[in-house]
Length: 96
Image (cartoon, rainbow, N blue to C red; front, side):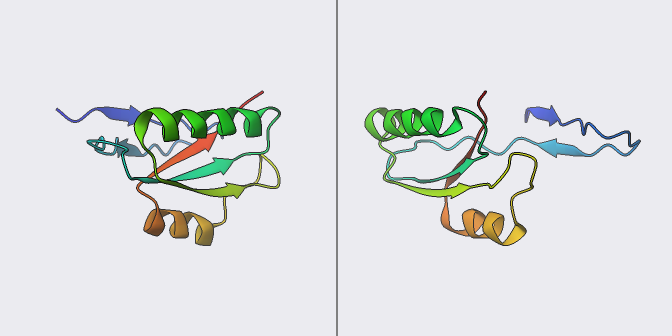
């Protein structure tokens, strides 16, 4: 059975969408990981530490980074599409 995740939008809307969770990668060794910094306090420090662990312990080969100007601003669709096309996995960093 494929696990399901329900994402709840904080706006007062009655429309709900169901998304399935992406298939787990068999390994991160040699992978290219997209890292999105949402610009919250301590996000950069968290993501740098995470990158170090992913590189050292899981064999991630490369990272592609994007830093949002503000946490409340959505990621531009063109940047998201570039990540989808060039990365094997993505991390959207949140900190506070």
